[in-house]
Image 1 (cartoon, rainbow, N blue to C red):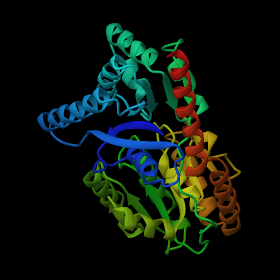
Image 2: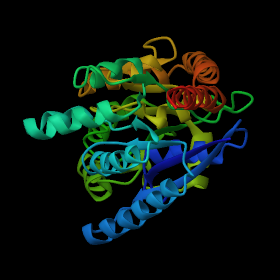
Image 3: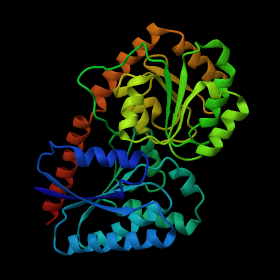
Image 4: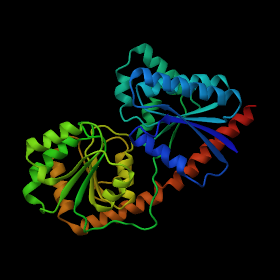
Length: 357
């Protein structure tokens, strides 16, 4: 039985990385793997955050000292998340424990480019020290290799639970935005697009803007544009509300400027919901323009309007995109497929360690 330590944010933190963790910890068919989860981060002031991390760090040292860990699987983003996991990695390596850095950050490049040469050298060192760097798509492999050519890198796509049959309802009348509200996710571009197409879509079509972030600013922009009659929801939703909204949505829109591999796209495709998103990062590996959804250039509001109109006003196209989306996620991005590959990664690292001993 391989004993795996997983570290990431507390489940109280909102975001895609926590969704990935929940999928792993809730999975009941692991073979030869036992997971211990130690959260290392909460959303709080600096003092509370530091105390929380120190407690988590002591817990990790205790597990390492008593030889309760075979492999540490550290989920990492950028900035503070990277430095916390780097500190853990350096400690765990002193105990001879294999360490995986699983990169989720959509802004890692921006973070890295803004560093001094000394800090860049430190990041490169940490990437090399990891026994494996996991990235979310083939397009992200160069992100690691260009910075640290000696680093070991492997692709593991995000994954979701997929229903046994495609549950999509073509008669749904809601357009969903599921993500952190703000400029980075393209929320304001979507609002501008809604204003532009308001007179060209049926009156029953409403938009669900679901997420935390710049909620008040988005509400003000809705009022400023005079599109309040088109908006059915603005703000965070819990798991139960999310399932309800997914069941009522005919399209998901995520016109982001920066992403990794968004869980919202995989989750909605698993429900057969056609997507409109941007041709950045890993998204084109999942969403194929004109085949199972639409891709636009970030900031191209005219193209966003055109794609919205095509899907809202064409029931047959929605059905076609729906089935192709569902089939692709079921074949390549289901949690079962993901777990089997992750089990294989753990086994290879463990066997390599045994050979060295």
